[in-house]
Structures are given as C-alpha cells and as structure tokens.
Length: 253
Ligand SMILES: [Zn+2]
Ligand SMILES: [Zn+2]
Image (cartoon, rainbow, N blue to C red; front, side, top):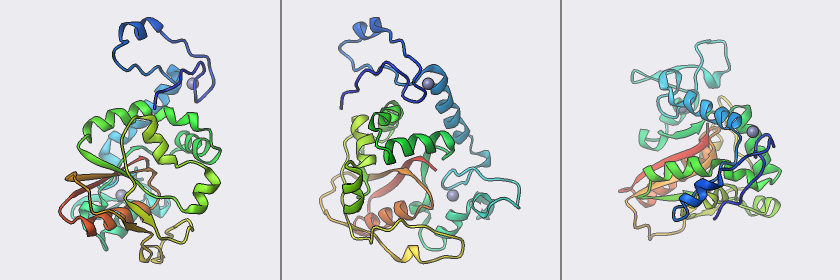
C-alpha cells in the first residue's frame, strides 16, 4: 500500500521537512519519506538497540529480565539448561518443544510502544501503522521465503474495530501474508496469571488450509504478552505441517 506523505511527525506532530530532490533522484525506486521526526526516530531506534543487547534478556523470547529477585515474577530470571529464561518461557517449556517457544520481538513493550499501539489499534488512528513500515520492510528481507501469517480476530473484535490491526501493518509495509486459521475461541482475552493453567487448555485456532507451499512459516503479531496466542498458533500449524519450520515475530514483547 503506498505510503501517503505526512507533513507532521506521526508520533509528536512536529513539522517534517522532506527532501524532494531525493525523491526525484530515486523516482524509479520506491522511496519512503520519513513519518517520524529525528528525535522520535531516535527514540524508536534506541529502544530497538536495548532489545538487541541479549545480555539481560530471556534466551528464548528476548524479554528484558531483572536482577532484583523481589521484582515482579514476570521479569525474574530463571535458568533452564544453563540459559537465562523468563517466567513465561519456563512455563511453556514444560508443555511445548523449544522450537515453538523461541520468539523474536523488535521492541520491548514500554510506554512508547504501548502508546503507539493503543492509538493505532484501540483508538483507530491507522496512519500510525506507517511508523512500522520501514522496520518491517527490513525484516521482510530476512524472511522473504517465509509465508507470513497473521492471527484471526474474533468476529466481535473485527466488527468493533473495523480493521485487522496486524494485517494492516503488513499491508502498509507491502508484505504479503495470509491467515490460515479459523478462530474457534470464545472471544475472551486470554490471560495467564501465575499458577493459572486454564489458558493453555483452550486452542483458539484451527488451521483451515492444507496448501501451504512454503517450507517455512512466520507468525506475525503485534505484541507478545504471555505468548498464549502465538504459541497456540504455532502449535496448530506444527500439527498440520510437522515438516515445516515455524517461527514467530512481534512488534513488541
Ligand atoms: Zn516526533
Ligand atoms: Zn522468555
């Protein structure tokens, strides 16, 4: 989907000054004009760097972990096979093979990402989806041979929101994708509190196609909270396609 030209930073509304000469020079090549001012771009870039520094992150999902044992259980450090992992991964490790648990996120889910996501998704300011277009375009180059898939929304959510958030992010980034699932869940948001095992019993997705040609599948979602949705989706795919490589990526964790 071609990106509209924006005259103000999509994050802070500061005016943007575009270099149109650049557009002229590269007229045969697709040019993405910036949608963020330099300072906002830096905020997103710094956040991404924090996540690439794996020293203090969960070995399997990248979640930033804390040394302080009195911290919230979710960011506490756990050890598994000599590796540092998080609470959720420790939990999933008891139920699923490691390949289904490994996950990549682009950003930690901090205030910046939370605000962006809630304005885009919940308030419906869809233009904000273009903030991720360039980043996703770069990631697409690494996963060009993968079939990108998104998770289905419940009918109620889709009616309420009027757009499919993750599908729209991929449309904006010109990434082809499909949704090979039927949603068979109850529409309730799934949460996983410490000690609760209810959620992993409910498989909300059913694979509805047997015609995936690609050898590898990449499940794309906006945020990885507990991993419930992503891991269920990957496990449903793995059941139908046990021979395929199945990976997952989200904007945030
Ligand atoms: Zn800005
Ligand atoms: Zn983890």
